[in-house]
Picture (cartoon, rainbow, N blue to C red):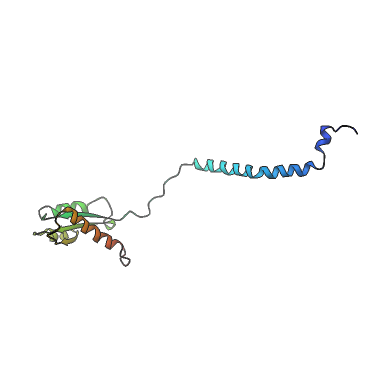
Length: 145
């Protein structure tokens, strides 16, 4: 029999299924490479952050003990913050006060918590009292802001 030439080798009928099998095996690698290429191109686009839909709510807590001389100015200053007034509260804790601190704070728009506990004195106790009251109001399911 005559020797096979390279042209005869490529025309053999059994090579077509082999080529199809190799193409099918290469297809996942090709598609994976294309996918990674597209992801790379898309990741280069600068992303602009989404604007906040709402501004956060917060409480400004002012512990005060016999501060009648200063409380109105303090609350007025806090009510003038560059922030929507409906998005924050000024809470004054009138802590064991013997003067008009609570009434004066209410008069200028603060929410007032009056605390009377002569055994636990000081700013730490007043802040703890206010934070517990603030969280209790914030988690009340019936209250809408």
